[in-house]
Amino acid sequence: MHSIRLWAVRQARFFEGVYRIFEPVVVKLQPLWNSVGYQRAEKPVSKLESISKGLLFDCKMCGQCILSSTGMSCPMNCPKSLRNGPCGGVRANGNCEVNPEMRCVWVEAWDGSQKMKGGDKIHVVQLPVDHSQKGSSSWLRVARNASTLSEDHNEASR
Ligand code: SF4
Image (tube, rainbow, N blue to C red):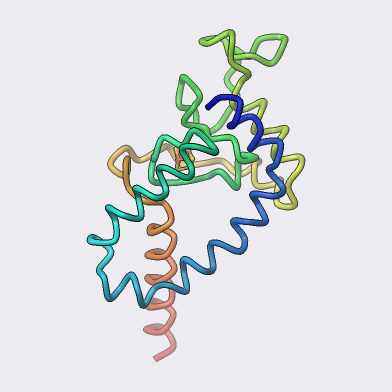
């Protein structure tokens, strides 16, 4: 798993491109999510998300994905679960102070972000993780947020 995760970070530019195509598709599927119901869609979609992102990124299904802001390195693999890193304990060789065998998730994040077109997003300060979202689908969250935004926009233009 760890080596696949490191490989995925090295391919950060590629996965950034994949997500740029994937996100609008998920948003465009809003009529489907609405007809099925977000709650009913949650179980199969989160399962699919967990399998695919678990394999590639060691995803922990926090429900608030920030991979595209962290060079495709999942911050939830940091033993301190830091959403803004690194901490002050990175070893001289770039490894983690808690797990000396593991390269720091945030050192990886920086390397991955340097490969990405939108790599500057790593400078954005992230909100603390909301643990109530754990296990839920980030993909559906993106679709739901887009749906809420377009409803608000329609209301405002009436
Ligand atoms: S940030 Fe959250 S949703 Fe994204 S890969 Fe990591 S645990 Fe999974």
